Image 1 (spheres, rainbow, N blue to C red):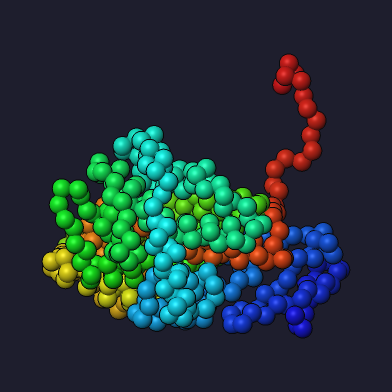
Image 2 (cartoon, rainbow, N blue to C red):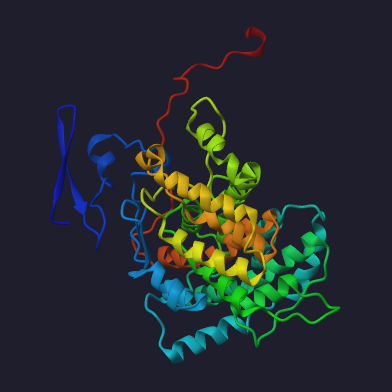
Length: 428
């Protein structure tokens, strides 16, 4: 913090320290601003405010870069598996072969949930949205695993972290089974993380189920692409909840509730709905015209991103994954895929979309991919939550271990009534 920034407010000049990260923009430290000036900053959505210091994930939206602990997402998705990415996010380094084997064992041997939790599902209506069930059941984990809720104990923090990563696929699969009215399928320790999840979702007791390795690898890659994404709305929610000292299960449930919002985790479902509305390739020009019309409520979903002003690096990997899944499931002639590819081609060559930097994002392809895997749209955000759990818990753990962390307390610009005296009800 050798650099200084000078803020002029009226006749006051205040020097503020400038903090420098490893890469990325500098940050002006305004922690003492109110003390020296009596003023706060105003930043709706905190889009220009660094709420924490983190070593986990870096995004350069202008260049289309996403890195976890310095490793590009493209390399992690192509060369590793999801549990390796989990280890990296949690511990900061890629594991050795021995560390990877130990970590995989710790996760895969703790994938069962407390048997009483199976009865917990019966309290929900059969037509409950799967995300509503996820919020309730994950929050209830604190009632079943209270031996790992002491956030001051490093061992308990790690036990809670492993439990959440290990049991989230089981809870998500149970949520799906309850949603479609089928019996729960228990996990098997001889399957890997993604294959186990697919089996728990799609196996039934009356026949054998063999996991297609192509689909398992695709599912694993989808998990990697959604593992963490810096200080987004749900991650910020987890950190804010955790700053109060809340237990990790409650914090992750808060993150799931935030992710449920259509502006955050529901984008791939909205994109799939849009492609179905367009229906055929010949209607694309009509819908592109609607997207450009400011007076038309239609919006082109799956293009553009709050952070990325370039091609979303995850979109290229998801596009490749989509092709693999459609071929493996016999849906390579899926009309929605044809609409998606033609829509992408038009948008990338249209001056309107180029000028506004509306490039395809990861949600553009993930909806088609998840549908081909056999999931209904109501489960899309559940899968997002499953994958993002490791990012949430890594960010939560980092925050708890940060000596500079304090309880979150955003300020406000008050525009309500000034002081006024109470008037007796008979005189109003």
